[in-house]
Every structure is written in C-alpha cells, then in structure tokens.
Length: 171
Image 1 (spheres, helix red, strand yellow):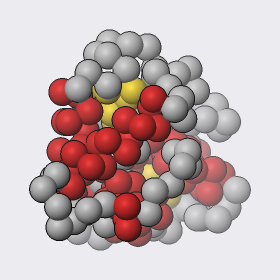
Image 2: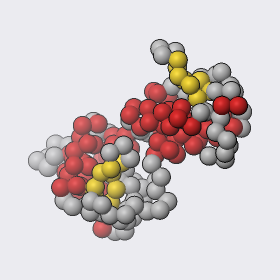
Image 3: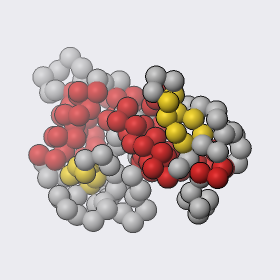
C-alpha cells in the first residue's frame, strides 16, 4: 500500500534510538527512494500502529518528527502529506473519510445495506479501514450531510429511505 513494507523486526526496541525516530527514518527512506512523493499521504497513525506494532501516541510522534524534519505537513482532519507546508496534494488524494463514506454509500446504493438498517459501527469501520475514531465519525457525518443516513442517539446510524438520498445518486 505504501511501497516497501518493513516488518517490525527491523526496529531496535532495546536500543538507544526512540521507536518513533526509527519509524520516521523508515518513512523518510520511502520518501527519498520516491516511493512516497510530494503530495502523497504519509501512512496514517492507524496504519503505522498496525504495521510496526506501536502505540497510537508513538505513531503521532512519527508524524510530528517528519514535520519537524520538513518532510511532511498535516491538514487537520485529512492526514499528513509528503512535502513542505502548503505544498499541493496529489490530485488523486481524496480525504480518507470521503473514501470511506463513498464505499458505504455504494453499499447502500447497491442494496447491501437496505433502508432502516444500521451501517457498520465505529469499531468495525476503524478496524476495516485502519483509521481513527475521528475519521470514522467524519465519514458518518459526511453521509448524514448528504442524506444517506440518519443517527439515533445511543442506537446507531441507519440508512435513510431512498427519497432522502442525494439527487445525484452517483456521489
């Protein structure tokens, strides 16, 4: 997904170099080899967490380290991207929450999730997409704004009836 996948055995968990610096170095290597280019997304916290068997706080420090080295910048709610702050993102880069919402909307359109039935819960989507809870919540909010779903507090989020779906059902 992000070029060469390093296994966590490469990390020296007993040595003097902090784990976040080691992971940041591995990501920097991907940038220097051209596997990650300006505007490309840096692996998400959830991806780093899973790929390197590290804590979420450690993954957060990786992004901060890359920013401090001038190799990446972060857009709140969208992710961390290769390049200096303000550098244009790859045109193909769509916020992950929109990609998730698009997949859920496609499942609704093709009948996999019928009206008045719950969409997958937060924990399930976090695992399925390897993202943080805030990203899943953005995706659900986006679906709600478009009219695909409605939320019942303490019960879940359900598919709206088709007449409430967006007019442009291709979205």
